[in-house]
Amino acid sequence: MKKNFYSLGLMSGTSLDGIDASIIKSDGEQFVELIDDLYLKYDDKLKKKIRKITDLCSTKDDFKRLSKEISKLEKEITMRHVKACKLIIKKNKNIKIDLIGFHGQTIIHKPKEKFSVQIGNSKLLSKLTKIAVVSNFRKNDILNGGQGAPLTPIFHKLILKKINKSLPSAIINIGGISNITYLDSYDKLISFDTGPGNYLIDTWVKSNTKKEFDNKGLIAQKGKPNYSIIKKFLKNKYYKKKHPKSLDIKDFDLQKINKLNFKDGCATLSMLTVETIGLAVKSFNNFVIPIIISGGGRKNKFIIKNIKRIIKNPVKLIDEYGFDGDFIESQAFAYLAIRSYLKKFITFPNTTGVIKPCLGGFTFKH
Image (cartoon, rainbow, N blue to C red; front, side, top):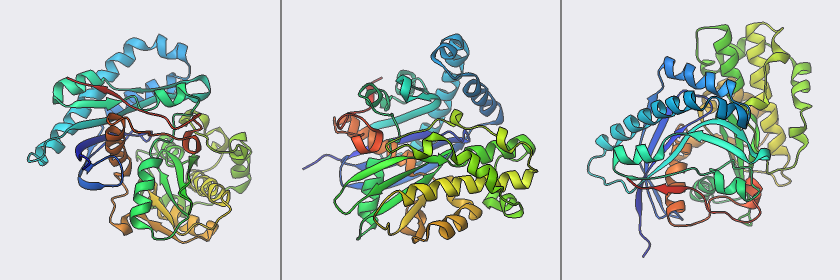
């Protein structure tokens, strides 16, 4: 009989809003039980520090030059993750957590240069929680010719098998960057980043107002998308490139829309997210039923309405199947921690471009 582990997954994404923490019970294969989820917001001061370092860090040399600042920030981020762990563990004190899956905060992602950095001190996290920590999930994949992203497809596959009687089907996660996981009727798994998710929209809103994001897409709803600018964005070679492929938030900039008014800029960037998701779905020959949406972007009604209009496939939110779309990624890292600990593959040629199925995270014990 396979052993089930209680695993705590931690995710702090490119939207830089805070930490998602999830506890699951799983054997790292077909069985998973979702136990609890918790969100811990980053305070504004910490957000600014992360954004500043992320903006300044574009190369290995930048990373070396900023090492002292990054080291300080890493400790601060780790202590926030310790707090998130302690809060969710306290809520579930009758459970003994076996593992923590720690993604860390992405500062730079350059797979072509075999370089991707997520900061967070795993040894410190393990020491302060007294639990084994599995982290550094991307390194092995990149060293073996992969992109190091997306990492969640193996968990998405488990979800699709649980909720779908018919395949092919797909999950699209709209986070800072959007990605798609496609599972065909022969159990073939394909995944890649489709394009921007919320990151550009959030950046535009923050630079023009005191708001953090376009709540429910209400600002975009009042604007008019500029399709000639969207076409310029879509000329990027990335969209013609075959999958698997991945993106960094630094692969985008807002210069093209700086002449637009605030509402039109919001509508244009939101439609860019929609159009790139549409391109991804249309790249598959088989009709996908249904498209399932997770991530923060699923709450943007403007984006969801236009995805439904453009791709014609049935579109459903993952919440309709009893999953909380805010915590799929943190649940995935709890699952990846178990698979890594058990020396099971976490990335595959059709998900990251790695040469052959690859083992992942490294375990740190207190």
